[in-house]
Image (cartoon, rainbow, N blue to C red; front, side, top):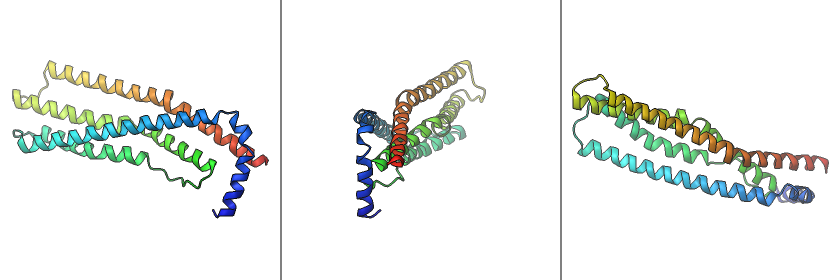
Length: 204
């Protein structure tokens, strides 16, 4: 887009300002900014937790006692997760839409960002909860075997696994509730705003 194209786009967008203001654009932008800051804080917290987890895995492997196969697999999964989770979180914040200084591009960037976050939450069970639960199951099972010399889970271990499943289910529903109540409403408003902008541009 050259400068003349940019000026023409600006003129077209300025012609729609009165109509867009009726949608309360400032309020939508404030909601999007607030949500983005909250998500960024969550990403930073999760990355810090992954660094702590990776440190714990390294210390357990270097300083801890000998581990059986189940415990070694658990450590391997946790080490992988401590690197993979930050990668997924950071990748979800990367935007392919270029910012060409127009209102439409800003809206499209925010939409893409929220759509990526929404998709990430929708698949949280596959890329986060299931591998983490598997690591917990293997680690606790391996610890049980080392203590009892039996591969058969006892009642306390089964109850522990049940608690892990319940906690994971709660986390899953909490994240999906957050998507429906926090991400989706802002995304819907931005999609409506883009539709109004495109409609006004076609009518001018």
